[in-house]
Figure 1 (cartoon, rainbow, N blue to C red):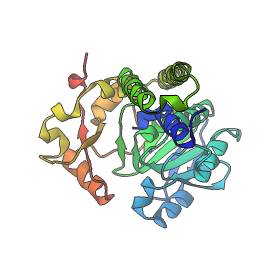
Figure 2: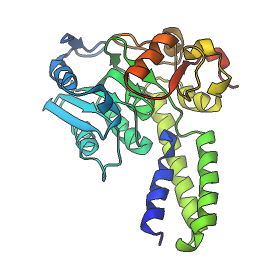
Figure 3: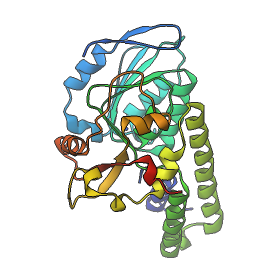
Length: 293
């Protein structure tokens, strides 16, 4: 058996692709439901912007409306994530809306939540910031996706060939260092890689069902953000280029159409907004014609 610290590292490796107005919402193209998201927006207003990167909190003023703010964590670690997962997995007879502000988190947990949101035809409303696993799965994995004014939706790869290669390399280093603490390193390696492959298949199926091109994972991971021009990244900067995003036209071509609102797509404005959140990185606009073939 692995030691406690080794087990924690293995759990982390298995989830690596992470390393998400008081106007009414009217659902389109279905039986019309009108939702007031003001309770969520008031709740977000009472919280600091930096809390989008802290352990997630969940608030549900009624069974049709859920509000989530913060990091998506493994369910055994985060009460807020557990509450979100429970809400996403509980049928309500239709008409559910999730308002979310998150820089992402555990990819496997986010994927499972997104599968339930999709199955219930939930409207997802990104508030201010939805990045990494929030963007990949919870936002992209539903058909009715909306944003508040000037929200950021930032992508960061996922369960891809590149991520699998990084995991294999990390496992080799791990087993070289602590292999004597693991009963059968090869069996353990095969188990973790099989779990990754299963998640990759689930991820691709989720996106296809939502009408979204899986390039938002695979092509994003295959592209080197460091090769993009400074203009696409908001100017010259020494900060790491941790995320990418798309123009409105390219997003629509990828199937990431919005039912309401508009994201920020100007590189200077995007990175000014990221700085406002106190984050030490920049994001780059990724044109479709730069996707690796």
